[in-house]
Length: 499
Image (cartoon, rainbow, N blue to C red; front, side, top):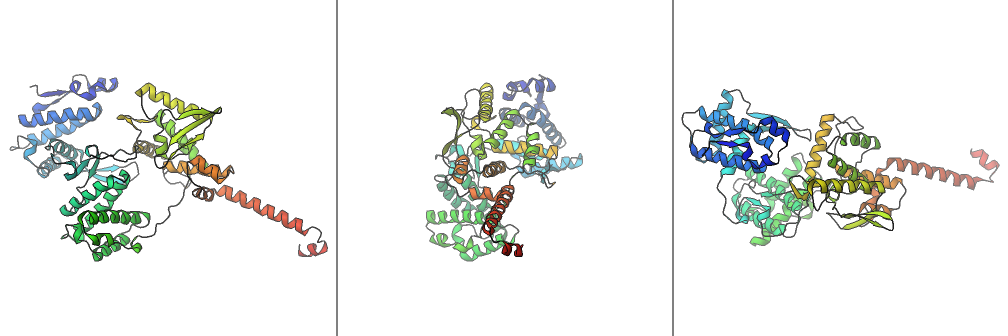
């Protein structure tokens, strides 16, 4: 067999742009002869072919740098295995780090995220090696429920998930205690049957935090049956004093309680169902209800136009509709219609129910333009805004957020206070709600336009409108003065005395 894997043989080559094909050359390849043993060459061949199905041709080309570095590290050793699977991850990591130190390569990399935080990550060569080892691991033949990483698609139950957040796996590996991990799997499987996937993921997060605490402070505990009130109170004190507070803590404890109570029911441990008392749940700290100013909206929108044209349309439509981002991203191609000569839109809210509302002719035309763009580029789809990698799904929220945050960093966008711009799609909805209050619409009309079932939430938008509050207060003062002056008419000299 030829010791080369040509790019033209890979699946990603067929969909690659002509520019990248010209840049890297039509005959470029991976040279497997750089590897010392035939079994290892075949392992890399399978891995490279798989990468060709998963990533773009440009990524395959970029990863060849790490492949060559790996080969150089291997060639520098007198003794080496014939197969990648003969050594474990730790042995390979030690070998690569030794070679990197000898050749002046950094062992870590500082990476700035789109959120502005600096993270320390392993060198790309190390991560490349770990990716190969994961690929080569023999397939786990156990039932999905017994595995430590669940493939959501392989579970035999329908999953209630928000389509704008794609989740493929549930990972139990950071629940460190074997017994607790097995018990929690049973509870999580039960919860998946009647809870949304997003809720279950939050439960998993709370269990991981609790498991880490047990590992660090109570390493002898391996089963939920061993958890008692004294231990729980220790953990609650830890949560209250470790620097986190408010809504996050409250939510974590509620989710932990839900899972432990389910474990108690499944395994017949009634003490777990009575473990928590009402005062264990800290009061929620209401988040500050913020919105964009008109100046901030203009500044942000001026730069949003530099994004991909369909994402720009999506964000403009999102602002004009005043919907939740999940409702904008899941707009379907048949959402537009006319009633009594008025353009209307049907919005299938992910969180609640479907509702309809009138829209302007300009907004209807913009939505139709987005529909036509998708039809021309992707053919028949359910959604207007689709995920490039899987057009059966809507555009993913993380894709939108990362692109906008990347733009904010690149353009150094600042808010009215001179601080780095924060991007929150729900702030567009709040701005929309505030504008409705400033139009002096009644609460029921505002609720209807926002898709709310009741009017309770409208008070938040009214409180946020400082300009409206000032105007209304001034008008109220003026009206009060007018009434008082009218009542004082005819007092004559008595009135003059008090003036």
